[in-house]
Length: 71
Image (tube, rainbow, N blue to C red; front, top):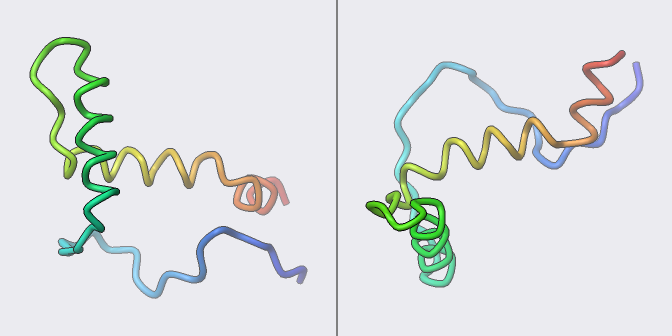
């Protein structure tokens, strides 16, 4: 079996769960601005709401992951 190079390491459990994280202030500001831009003049999208779709997009576009799925 060939070792696949992914952006993330192994995940022990795939059950959904709630986590709490501390974001660096610059990242929080970037997420806040991104949420403002995403809203296109409407109510800004909260930074916490952006995290799951961003992570899903990251995983979906990870070339190592896509390569492994094709095998």
